[in-house]
Image 1 (cartoon, rainbow, N blue to C red):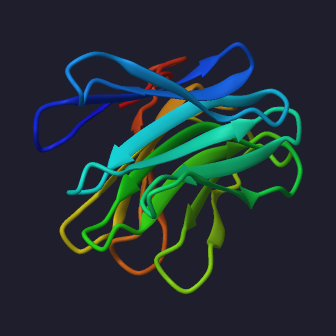
Image 2: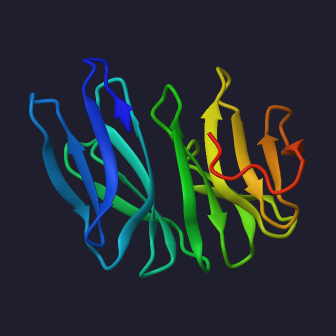
Image 3: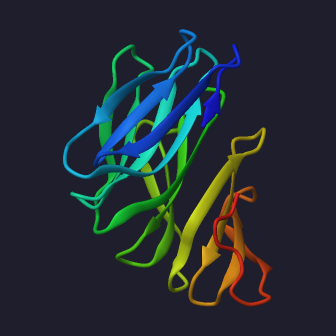
Length: 186
């Protein structure tokens, strides 16, 4: 869920095998289907720009890909961001002040935490943590310098982990290693 500057709610969700979007900007709930190309819309994450336009990351189960949708141009645009294997589960999305997207997500094929951004001309995809089954239940936030901070679950070790690129390269630390802890982070 995201709330705009007029305190109206915007929700992205999985409905009947499709990516759906609802908002109450008119005073009542308006719902619409955003992507219906197979089984799409799981693991959604939504953010709004200052104009109340929506940006959504989500998993395309039919094509096992990370997808991204936005209505920033006035109509909905959908693209595949990463389609190299079974990628795109457990997405989390954040926007910078220039409305560029930063997405953390899980690569189930390689069992890695991955990160994608369109802050440059095209999407850049990075494997952040390749330490064996790390990267489920991601949550991302940006600092004032647009550096990423990601919390996630390391399945192999049962740990809560944290990754950041504030130094210019990715630094990963274990936050809690008390045993089978760290799922469903935020």
